[in-house]
Amino acid sequence: MTQTDTTSAQEPVLVIGGTGKTGRRVVARLRERGVETRAASRSGDTLFDWADPTTWAAALDGVATVYITPLDTTPSPTPAFVEQAVAGGVRRLVLLSARGTDVPGFFGPGYEDGGPHGEGERAVRASGVAWTILRPGWFAQNFSEGVFLDAVRAGELALPTGDGKAAFVDADDIAEVAVAALTEDGHAGQEYGLSGPRALGMDEVLDEIAKETGKRAAYVRVDTDAFRAGLVAQGFDDVEAGLWTDALHPITTSAEAPVLDGVRRALGREPRDFAAFVRDAAARGAWG
Image 1 (tube, rainbow, N blue to C red):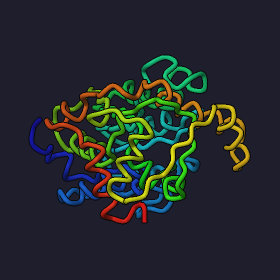
Image 2 (cartoon, rainbow, N blue to C red):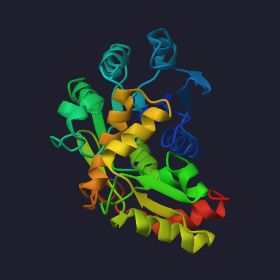
Image 3 (cartoon, one colour):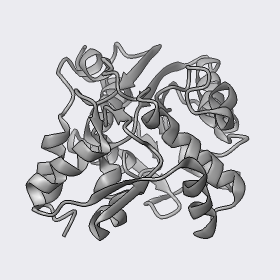
């Protein structure tokens, strides 16, 4: 790795999804480095709405570097955004994609050709500018500030993941890799698969949380059809319920279990362990 690319650092960095899980962490780290940063979202300091392309031009004005947190819909708006960004003078793109996007069948039939993430990856590769692709697996933060939090707090986590395991990745590691790719040389053309340092099943995850909180949520194994029906009952449409169920498939099959080397390659250190994530989240009162 090299030192900060000062040429890029003198121009604003646009962070799409600047108030989200990885985006707000990227924004904080860039600003700590003294990099002028635009936190772009529907609620950020820079207005940006994937569904409203008229908001894109102002967000991109004067920007040379962009971190893209894509919208997970088909067709993806990422290719159109990339085209507009490059036409406006952007010279570096860092795309948040997903583990398994390049693996046929990884997410099941709902994500043919990598789904919307695959569309985004193909767009940045064909952009003609420097690009880096981040492919993280399931976030550790899904248990502390995401989709699993309410269930863990309520004492029962019901999922169709069986005895499958995943090497959950800390969102702080994702952000650090993103910042390196946004501000340093040596990351252009790189695809970083990002994971934690060990694989855990859901029972092991809940054990780790219980060690810090003193309260152990139960892991309830449900079948796929029952899980999908539960999502529909909560208001998801059939397509959304199917995609969400498919997204869990790599945990069920333990396709998310192998440890990846992206954090080590990008940062020169090992990824953060799940136990360290739990200690910090518990200290902040994530589980009450």
